[in-house]
Image (tube, rainbow over all chains, first blue to last red; front, side):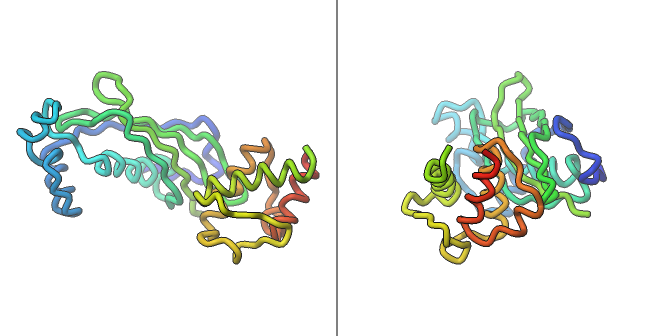
Length: 138
Length: 79
């Protein structure tokens, strides 16, 4: 986990990490949220809708924004204020997500940073992007 | 940009941030007059206004603003 203070962070600062969407993640997310939509949970159904396999829950993808802020940028001192997310392409079971956040802006008055976050899959296709405002605790 | 033009631009920002095109701002408008204008939304407003007007409010500005009229005063001074 990173421990950046507000003053240590500069505009343009980037952090990245990767993750793979697994059956276990999908199952845990379904159990937590109760989202039993078959597009995510039944391969046969997803195939019938034209997808090669189960489509990952959009909010499971977005949940890695929590990881980005809470573990990487700024890390320990993170307090998420706001998230705007676009799901620009489907994420599929088994996909690798490469997630990169860049500091777009610092708000000195509120000791908050604005991050632009891009999610790309193993083929380099952007599947999700987000703008996130995160407070940096003292 | 004159004060009325600034008010129009700020009003548009309020409409976007609160997703409410019925908001009408006056110099006397405060957070009490608009549903959802809480401390976190205030940060969003300040951020959007700073970007739209290409300026930064000082800590003194942010703490001192008592209503929309005082916000417009500050934006006028930055012209």
